[in-house]
Length: 514
Image 1 (cartoon, one colour):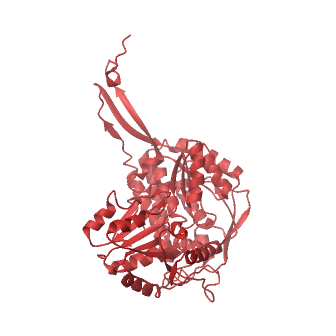
Image 2 (tube, helix red, strand yellow):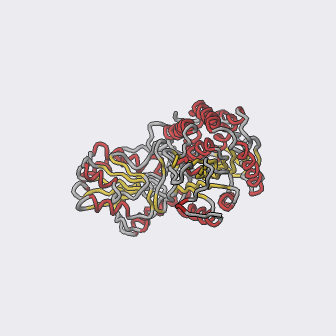
Image 3 (cartoon, helix red, strand yellow):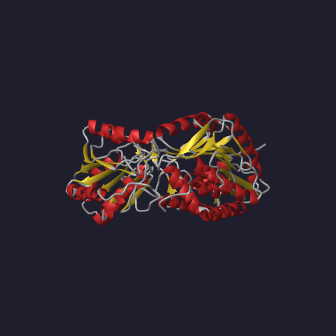
């Protein structure tokens, strides 16, 4: 695919190519806020328009979602799972147009757009199985004739705030699990990618309506920062799951904590790959290059730093610099291209400012960056992937720049020194080590190794499978989404004790005779 008939794609997904309503209760669309345009970074053209939700619209959505939750939680978990199974099948039917819209509106490659929709399908499959495995524990009681156990109940209304870089997948990671757990969900998608979110809401509404799911279980509000603040401060929202920058996450966490609510945060990443003398360079190059330039460096798991042993530094960097010379930048719908545009002009400016800042701090440019101009680059959002030799302590290196900038540095001695550099940032999302040395690999994965939520051996930092819990430590937020037992965050835990005797013994042998 090298071009897109956007009107046809929008029509297939039930999205208007003019003004769309930015709030939905799952049955009714509404919005009373300002109208915004959605522009594609591919060629700069306008795709469509969306009328934003106001706080008044948000309050209506919350009221409906709360009522919907009270009904939905009474459905059996397998029955809820059946609805999610049908959603997964619907996503299979819409995979190509939805993947194309993701690519066109966000700017990632068409293959990555299809891959993002596949992640949605995969999490639906995972959630269906989970719907029959919402298990508790039986616990031995110290009191004779007593049974003690734990069980999990639906939590309530869950707010999901997602970012532009994965405009649909992150929503599904949260909602597929929350729905089988019995929760209602309100989605606040990024204003930079509103049409993909409307498409997903349309697909969900179609499936939910066919199954008579209560109104409000799948809701959406596209709005500005005021809507995000309303979600964070609303006591009716049991859990706020927020994906985005560290400053945004800190703001959400403070607001939610102030009302003693629950939050799940997936924030910035400053991910490093360690390359040791025992690395297999055949896998180092594709892992490092894709990690750094894939999605134009706009993944939270993108490889930001390469930490290379000084004994192989020159050799490794020659190979990587040569590989950068082969990167094709252009229309992401053309599968011959490796890299598409960044999301908008603000991102371009952040990219340029970061390069200048790195130079000012003493960085040495190994692969020159810059903005591409001319035919095919009319949007002004296409930039060259850059490589800069730096020191880990540079201020710009310590902060995440959402762009294809790769910082490289040397380490000497054993892998302990590399791990110290890897951990020497405030973020703690993803990390990787390239080595065939078993001792180095095990040290990296030990408690004295990587301090990130994700630690990989002989694969890159970017990309994650649905089956594993996804998330990071430190200022990345500490949340976990997707696989493993991440479902527990969407439920409330309850401990139950049953006395089936005619006596009332107290715990710890306490006597209280009357």
